[in-house]
Amino acid sequence: MALLGRAESRSRLPAAAGRKVDKMSPDHGELGRAGTNGNAGDWHDTRLDLSNRVAVVTGGTGGIGRATCIELVREGVKAVGVVDIGPQVGPFCREVNEKLGREALLAYQGDATDAAFRAQVFADLERRFGCVSICVPAAAVTRDRLSVRLNKDTGEPDIYAEEEFRRVMEIDLVAPIYWAISTIASVARDRARRGLKRWDGREAVEGVIVFIGSVSSAGNRGQISYATAKAGLEGAQATLAAEAIYYGVRSAIIHPGYTDTPMVRALGERFIDENILPQTQLRRLIHPAEIAHAIVFMIRNSAVSGQLWADAGWHPVA
Ligand SMILES: NC(=O)c1ccc[n+]([C@@H]2O[C@H](COP(=O)([O-])OP(=O)(O)OC[C@H]3O[C@@H](n4cnc5c(N)ncnc54)[C@H](O)[C@@H]3O)[C@@H](O)[C@H]2O)c1
Image 1 (cartoon, rainbow, N blue to C red):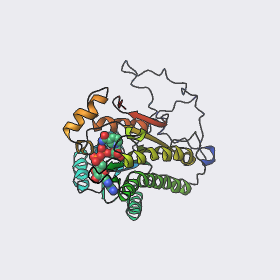
Image 2 (cartoon, protein in one colour):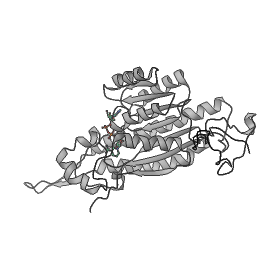
Image 3 (cartoon, rainbow, N blue to C red):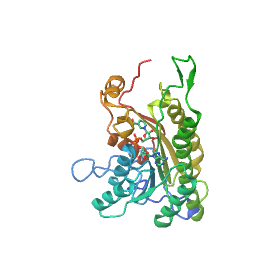
Image 4 (spheres, rainbow, N blue to C red):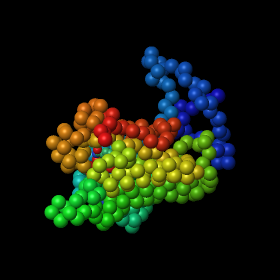
């Protein structure tokens, strides 16, 4: 059994690609390889090597998106296309790149629901760096209110505006799915160029999608549109997990609990203190960096699939 240093980073192409392949046992048969410094430091690293990977993060200057870009850079990613509708995207990327001393973050200001804009971002990233293989589509909005409110004066019900509902679906459900699909397409095109067909388990994983769900996906009072969108992403994740592995792309979803970002701060301190914190085991908001850390863990550990709940022990009362 050959020792594979960085299992994911070494090219382990199928025989069809003209390379020798090592069939690995579940524990790779090499776990006892001790380090020279007296601890296990020399044990091989099975995590996905990011140094040759290009990622795209939408909502990249929001609380969780920004933290995810920083965590990806800390983990050595080659480049990240940072997509956001807000004007902070340029300054944020400049600041990080200056600290880093290389152009790792590329700023793309635009609307994540705009298909032409999305195509431009992928074309530009592919032209500069090659295939885009990691996607964290984090851009989202909330438009919260009860589905039906009774007007006490008239006795008439006032229902949640359909227009608002559709807009939330566009931003929080349709757009993340299409950024994910475009990433899978980028990998598929790249594989076709390299003459590769169905992905083989002996190859390195080609790409990863991590959708951002929410604890609200389980249903949440006042969030008919947001909760519906987040639950919908679960179906997309499970479907793409089944489809995209054909190209070697994994798909997973993280469900964060209430995290200290502008989206949650907009609820107001009193609401957070009275309605959110008492329903968490940690009695605090989650730090965006904690979610980013979990996202990058999901990206780099290929054994992780499906859903991860990072919710600070969220237990809402009925
Ligand atoms: N904060 C939380 O408690 C929490 C909990 C669960 C899930 N989430 C999810 O995490 C993700 C990030 O949320 P956050 O808390 O960092 O929110 P945030 O408001 O800080 O960030 C969202 C970002 O998305 C951008 N954006 C919004 N609409 C866009 C559009 N059409 N095109 C491009 N960019 C757009 C915004 O400009 C903003 O920078 C979202 O998917 C959110 O639903 C957040």
